[in-house]
Each structure stands twice: as C-alpha cells, then as structure tokens.
Image 1 (cartoon, rainbow, N blue to C red):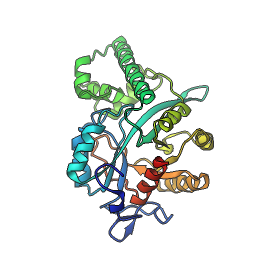
Image 2 (cartoon, rainbow, N blue to C red):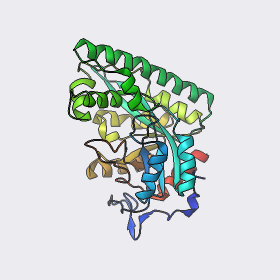
Image 3 (tube, rainbow, N blue to C red):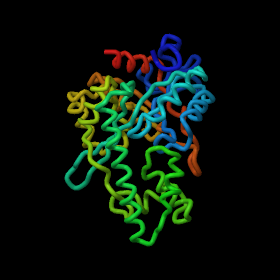
Image 4 (cartoon, rainbow, N blue to C red):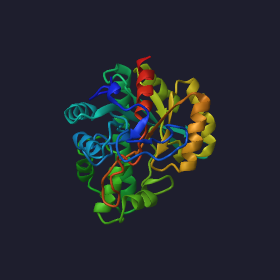
Length: 312
C-alpha cells in the first residue's frame, strides 16, 4: 500500500469533486484545486527549502491526497516524511530523482529519472547514491574555486548551512550568491554563473539514463522520465530506447509543460504503453518563487497504476 493511507481510500480517477484531473479522460483538462496527487516535490534533504515534515504539512494544506518526495540523489528525507504523512493522513509516494546526462557531441544534456517505491536499503542503490553525494562534494569545491577566480569569494560554511544537512548542489550556491549581493535572484545566479559556459559552471559526474533506470529497477522501483518538456526534442526519440532498458513511465504534467506539450506527451506515453505521471517539481517557497506544491495534480488512479507496476 502507499505510505500513510491505503490506495483503496482514494476516489479513483477523479482529482476533485465532480471534476477530472489532467488526462483522466484524455482531454488534458486542468485538475481541481482539491484532491489528487503531486508526485514530484523536494525537501531540504536535497535542494528544497522546507523539511520533509513541512512539505507534508504543505501537501495537507493544499488538499492533496498523495504527495511524492523525490529528492535529488538521496533517500534521506523519506523516514521523516513517512512519519509525518502517517500523522497527517496523507499518502506518501516515496521516491528519488537521479541526475543523469546524455552526450550530444557538442554538449551534455541533463536527463532526470524519477524512481518510485525503491527498496531504500538496496545495497547497490545505496552505494550509487553515496557515490553521487561524494561527486556533489567534489563539484562544490570546484565551483567555489572557479568563482574565486573571477573575484567572487563565497563562504562554504554558509552554503552548507543553506543546504541544512542535505545533499549540496548548485541551487545552494545560487542562494549564497543572492545573499552575497552578487545577483538579485536565484534565476540570475544560474544564468550568469552556474550554467554551461559560465564562470562557475562545473559539469557533474557522468551517469547514463540507462544506468539510472537499471539501478531503480534492480531496487524494485518504477523508473519515470522527469519533465521531458525541458529536454531537446531530439531526445524524445530515445523514449523507446529507454523503455527497452526498463523505463516504465513519463512525467506528462509538470509546472513548466504547456498544455500542448502535456497533450502530446500523454498521447506518446499511451502509444508506447508508458505510465503517465505528473508533479509540480516544487522546491520552494523561497524569495521570488512561491511554493508550487499542488499546482499540478494527477488522478489517484495514476498513483494506483504506478504502485501496481512496482508490485510486479
């Protein structure tokens, strides 16, 4: 069963009273404001701004029935989220988001793979996540070195304080740049310093999508391609390739997907027999960015299908 409450308690394919969720009837109609599931959120275990317990409370206040905790390259926030979900009567869909890359020759493109219901004590997965965290530490050191070379000295201790004990990443460096007055917003920090070709950019340690999919599958989880709308269109041709490696679903609905993209992704997912999912990808709230949790809601029926796939 889903963490926190039984799937049988959900209202089937409806996300709110009398109104279908996105894609529940194939129309792509927007979800109602109450009910349903947001399967893509982050906490302070990675680069979110609220603790797992706070994220669960935000999900409860948003009227969600289920919420997915999918921190980057870590499962560390799940125990606290699980306890909070049980207390709040919210269904927890435990997950992880693995950061991978595809080499397009002239550049590397990041591809994120979500994994739901993995066995959290699976030794190979635990080892992989430890390796990814170690690579994040090395990357942070190199980012700080590169920024120092252009006259920007950031306090590493402050960056770690912003991470609040979680897996450190570029968003924490971006927040430190805002605090230091170097830039006005996190978006500006990325645009000027932390993206490819900019002074503070350092590529992450490589991991192929196929390897991430295999690790999730080996740990008993369900691999789902995250936010395909943020990828170059040429990579959409790889969906069947990744499916042959075990990809089980696609995040059809996402905060940054247009209605036209979502409709196209839903059609393609159905053609390939890939499970559709969706989530807000909420990291906030933070200055200049309100909390997005619940902005994207999918039918409870879709959660059931994911869970059934995991049980296989």
